[in-house]
Length: 273
Image (cartoon, rainbow, N blue to C red; front, side, top):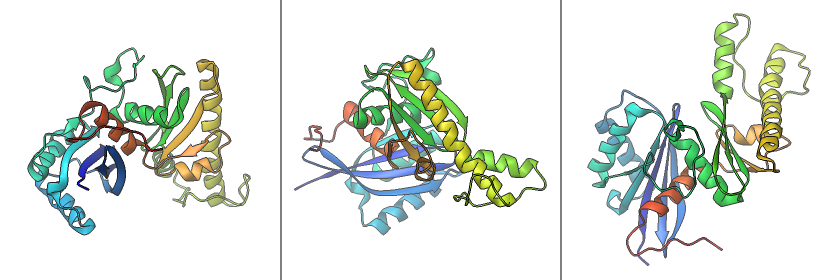
């Protein structure tokens, strides 16, 4: 059976997450996925070499890519990735931004202020869990994106990310040293390392639970909570409110937006049973 490949690219402040979705009979499944560091100074030629190497390693011929969708919160990198898509895959990519169909009314005062990744996460969270739902993304920033029972994007919360907070602490406090974000033996640390680990791990989990409680109060309903991002699993293990962890929530959201805007040839979107 013939199939087409969608390349989904999420450009964040710290990392670029890339995934391939193979479409058969209208159903897109996540296949290969990679995470690269975000380098604002990289050229399209350098990125093209990196992408081609990843495709070669995975045994995927670039000519199989029939469509590309990109979401970026780093504006200077967007035209570079657009050139990569055009040169390597001979495809004009679909860009997540104003004018793209999301199927989700945005109740932000200025919708253009909402990061592309936040809308993508909201769409994916609502597709997976219905509404109301809160998507928590543990990235460079920890973000909470809130969807109403009627499927409306209501806004959210932005908090410093775990790694950003740790780096700020270590750079400003001469007596504190870098530690691994691991679970300490107890909340009350008996060493400086354990005290920092307790603050970061249990403190962030407590922050999540407190924010979810406040958000639920404003939504007027017991919203479901789904988490994504590199540290989602670790924080979720200590949280009382996170119900589900989806490492590739943003990539799945990009797939959904692609299906709403530009489907592969001879394909009709359908949900997997």
